[in-house]
Image (cartoon, rainbow over all chains, first blue to last red; front, side, top):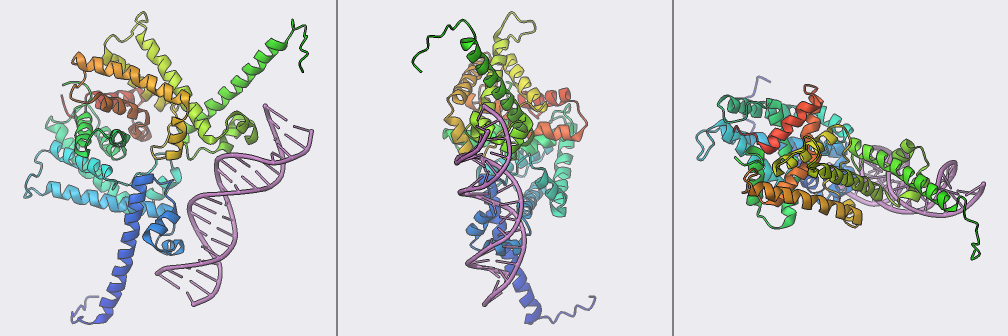
Length: 218
Length: 218
DNA sequence: GTCTATAGAGAGATAGAC
DNA sequence: GTCTATCTCTCTATAGAC
């Protein structure tokens, strides 16, 4: 292990790496399909046959990659959590232009990102009621780690925003966190989209306003 | 068959009325069970076998009363809409003590009622994604009428509250209406309940605050 | 109108050849 | 690792006796 003498110009490792990359690429294609179907139809209405058909492989091949439907859903959720964390990284990059400076603005930017993703059908949605699925998710280490990482980073911003007086300090931080998470499955977005009277950008701003400013006049 | 000479002083009409009442009573018992199961598990996870078992009758008997599972769900939704409309009536009863006087306070009272009902497991929840179910609901006259009645009455309060300056006038009334409807399936309630750190009353007030006052400090 | 028994369809998961 | 074919189970809905 210590002896990495690095004249490894030839094939052997490269070949295995190539295969592994193919494997990962296929799995990523699968997860992308799952992600979209979860966003479009939800977990229960998504069938494994659908996934296999859209990926273009046989169902049995799918089960070589993922041992169950629940694992498919978990993989999609993990991928989305990673994307969310990556986006939070960009918010902390102070060198980027237009980067939000205050904790409240970071929270707003994160919420906007979530709303846009949902409107564009990129955000997988799981049912609130489904104990077996929730159990499977909670046993998935990547999922739990991703969710905890997200919660910790948002939680830090929440507490900072409450400390600087920009966020309502009377609310427990956990209530704020859950309220923000709930924007990821807010049915209001779909309802407003269904009216056909608003652009996606307008819908985002309306929901942002109700979320941070409330319904009552200020 | 034609010869109904009948000295009908006795039972016949009374008997039929009694039978009809029994029929309705049983159907109401069924709908109550459906209502609770929908609130606990959601539509997909509720099976017709469960309903029959909890009511204490055979599944085939259930299908004598309601022609399909979708009709069961629709009946529960209609019942809940009627209860909601009845509650709005009490809000308009100016003679009642403690009755809200302003449109905004009426909207708040209606929202509180919804949140409490959900916390107590009385509010049936349907999946956002389920086109066949939504189609069945939209063909149910009672459901559509109830929903329209509710929307009109809430809509009137919304416009009045915007006119008197207590509700944010920049939001389209339809957006406000949907935002209030969405409180009926807000996952934040269940999440906060799951922490075990708050009473139901505290949860209601937190969600009321985020809904009407927003997350940002005022 | 209530029951038992069963039809019929759909979906998750697997067997076994290649 | 991919395929076809099949298993197994669950669930909605119905048939038919009483």
